[in-house]
Image 1 (cartoon, rainbow over the protein chains, first blue to last red):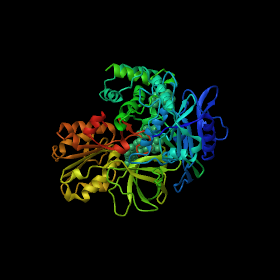
Image 2: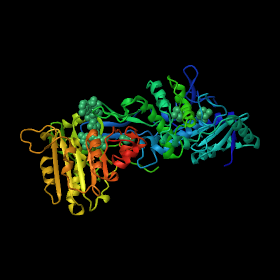
Image 3: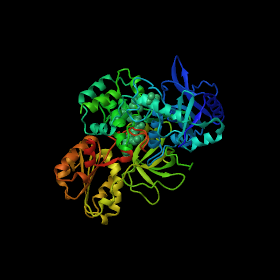
Image 4: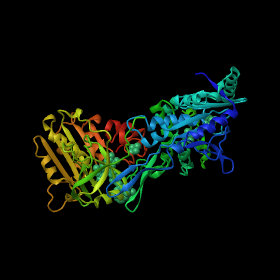
Length: 344
Length: 275
Ligand SMILES: Cc1cc2nc3c(=O)[nH]c(=O)nc-3n(C[C@H](O)[C@H](O)[C@H](O)COP(=O)(O)OP(=O)(O)OC[C@H]3O[C@@H](n4cnc5c(N)ncnc54)[C@H](O)[C@@H]3O)c2cc1C
Ligand code: SF4
Ligand code: SF4
Ligand code: FES
C-alpha cells in the first residue's frame, strides 16, 4: 500500500481532531518520576508524540482491565442480571508493534473460536490503534525482533507511524485507518523515496546482529520435554509469586469472576487472575492438579512458548521484555528460551 | 456489528423440586423461567449462578427431557453449594450453558456399556444411564458399578434398583462402611470388577468419581483387557467461565471446560494425567 507522510505540526492537528471523535484518547505520557504509562490524555494533552521505550502497562489493561463490572445484579433473590456495556470509543496512540501483535493474538483468543467474549469484543471493536514503530530497542530486556513482533508492526494496526528526521512516515493497516486519512486528507502528503530509504536504514540498524528465534523448534523441544529439569528447578526457586509478569504481559488473559452484594443488589465483577498462583487451579476440597511451585511458572512458559505456538502457529510471547524487567527473582523468559534451545 | 450473545449472562431457572439424596447432597429439578430449554447432551455441564456467591459448574444429572426440565445433584462442599442447599422450591437461580463435550453417543450403538461411579460421580453418569436405558434396544448389556461410603450415601435409591431390572442390565453396589442391614459387597469399586459380565474387548466404559477411584479403577480395568480408547472419564477441574477463556481449567494445552470434561483414557495418557 502507498505510504504517506505527516509533519510533526500536522500530527498535533490530527490528534486534536481525533480527540473530538472519541471518549478516551489513550496515549503514552509521563507518570510518577519518569515512567511512561499509557493513559487517557483527552483532557490534559499530556501525550508524547514520540517517545523512547515502551509503556509500563500494555493496551491489554484497557480491554481486559484489572477489574471490570460485567453485570449489575438487580435482584439477588430473582437472579436478575443486567449486562454492563462499555461502548466507549477509544483511540490508542503510540502503541508499540510488540503490543499490536499481542492484541492480534488476544483478538483470536477472545473473539475467535467457539465462544465470543462479548465484554472484550465490545471494547476491542470500538477501538482504533495508532502504532508508533520503534527506531531503538525499548529496553535491554526486550527481544521483539527475535520473536517476530518488532520493530515494525506487520498487521493489526489501523495506522502505523514511524518517526523520521523530517516528520512521520504513515502506513494504513485497515479500513478504520483509511477513514482517518480520508477525513484529514490535507494533513498528509505522499512519502518521498528518501523517507522509505530512511526507514530501511533504521530497520537495518535495529536488527543488526539479531537472530530470529525458531519458536516452532522451541515448542517442539518443550513438547518433547527436553528442557533440563534443573532449569525448571532454578526458575521455581526464583519465583516469589509476586505475579508482576502475568499482570504486565500483553498476552496474559486469565481471569476470575466474583460477586459483591450489598443487601439485595450488587455487581458481578471479573478481575485479572494469574496462573502463577498456587490457588489458581485448586478445587473445592483442596486438591490441585499442579501441586509443585515450579509447575506454576512452568505453566506460564509452556502456555506462551509451546501451547500457543501449536494453537496459533506463533508464540504468544511477543518479546516485550516486561516480565523480565519486573521480576524480583531475575527470571528471564528470554534466557530460558536460549537455554532451552541451546541445551537440547 | 452483529449483535452477539453475552455468553456470561445467566438465564433464570426456577427450582421445581428438591430431593435429599444423602446427608450432604441434594438433587434439584430446574426449569428455565423465560424461554425454551437448554438443549444439552449427556455429559455436558452448566454454570449455575447464585448472586453473591458466584458461579459453579454442575453436570446435568438427568437425560434430556421433552418438557425441558433438568436435574443437578449437588454436594455441599463450600460457599455456593452451601447457599444452594438452603434454597427452597420455587426459588430462582441463574444458569448458563450447556458447556463441554458430551459422551460419544454415536460410538455406543449396539455396544455393551459399563459405568463405574464413586460417590457423587454417579450424578454426571446418570444422564447417560437414563438415556441409554430409555433407548435400550440400541445398546447391548448395560452394567453399573457404584461405590459409596455407606448405604445411606447411595443416591437415587429406587431408580438405581430399577436400572438393574431392565432386560440385559445389572447394577453392582459396594460400600466402605456397611450397616447392619447391608447384604451387598464391601470395599472400593474395584472389588466388584470380577462380577461383571460384559466383554472387555468391545465394551465402552464411563467413569466418574474421586480422583483416586478413577485412577485405580482405570488401572484395574485396563488389566482386564478393556481398551484405552474405549474408557472415558469425566474430569473435574476448577472452573470459572466454562467457555475456554478464564484459564483455570487448563491442563497441558487443553481446556477441560471446552475440550472436556470427558476424556478417553488414551487422551488422558497423552496429557500425562491419571484423573
Ligand atoms: C465439569 C464439572 C462438573 C461438576 N459437576 C458437579 C456435580 O454434578 N455435582 C456436584 O456436587 N459438584 C460438581 N462439580 C464440583 C462443583 O463445581 C464444586 O463442588 C463447586 O464449584 C464448589 O463450589 P463452592 O462455592 O460450594 O465451594 P468453594 O467455596 O469455592 O470451595 C470450597 C471450599 O470449601 C472447602 N472444602 C470443599 N470441599 C471440602 C472437603 N471435601 N473437605 C474439606 N473442605 C472442603 C475448601 O476449603 C474449599 O476451598 C463439578 C465440577 C466440574 C468442573
Ligand atoms: S512473556 Fe514476558 S516478554 Fe513475553 S510477551 Fe509476556 S511480558 Fe512480554
Ligand atoms: S519490544 Fe520491540 S516493538 Fe516492543 S516496544 Fe520494545 S523495541 Fe518496540
Ligand atoms: S473454565 Fe474457564 S477456561 Fe475452562
